[in-house]
Length: 150
Image (cartoon, helix red, strand yellow):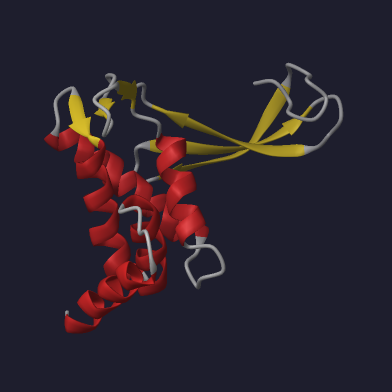
């Protein structure tokens, strides 16, 4: 594994532990040249899962995009990075279990919103505002009213 700081190829593993419900291994490494530490993740290579976008085009499922979207929604909220990582792992597992090769972006968005709603209501409204493309304040008010009614 190449060091992200000095680009040295040699490093040693200091610690390995299972994460994401056993679907990945987190390794803490130390570069042999600069002695700085960094973290790597080892995951099983999955079969490709294509996401059908709103416009009809297809792109490969990108776990990082999902993670970044949820992280943005949870910004400055009392939601830990471990919780977000577990949420992303859970959604990805459900997608791979329930869809063979293709899934619509709408299905993914609804899955994220369902889980964010029970996790953090502010994060839910933030995500929904981008996902549902709220055009005005009334859209926000409607989303908040729906939350209050549940």
